[in-house]
Length: 260
Image (cartoon, rainbow, N blue to C red; front, side, top):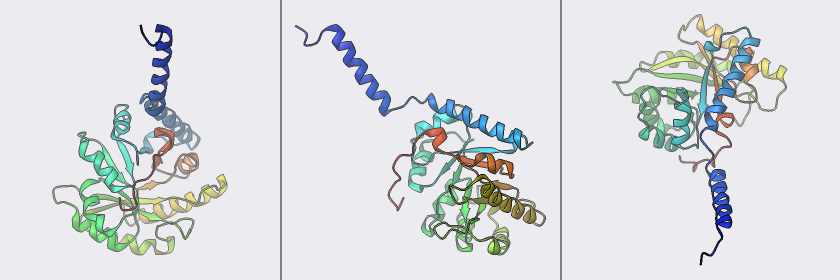
């Protein structure tokens, strides 16, 4: 005699399936989120009288599994941002798509510059000469120059990395002379929870700094600025690359150990 009736068994199966779906959300939601995010970019570009082709969407995949990256890749996403080196290497090692561009967007420790220089296409968080020299030194000769952005502490926050605007020119001059780096622009993370007018003020300072530098360094064209909460303000002020994570992949998983 069966322990459960057929109806009870069906209920149990549905409950188990529901738990599995909760634990492992359908990857179909990632393409849908990419569509919504691109629509936000398109609307912000339209309001700013800019072409959406001028703004690259970088999907911040930190702490997320390779399966999430592949779900986004299958929908056309090619730029992915990673903060934690070991977590990123696990994905890069098992990803066989050569057209993905990997962006390192975390703090850079000196003992990890060799690996970062060898494994990434972009670095967004360059803020001192020593790190720049090590990245250039360790860039493998068979690879093109590593594309780098200088991080600017545009809101002068003591708890954030980045060079001040006053010190920017000197660092740009130093980085531009290194043979295996291509200085492509600037990056910032303004203070959070600011009004739209304050957001615009910070982003406009970044745009002005980029424009001034571009006169002397033509390769300095990009502005990596704008996340989920300030995407529209960043695009209105000239951002060429927005960094979006939670709106695409959902809530972050716990961060790896500090030495990752």
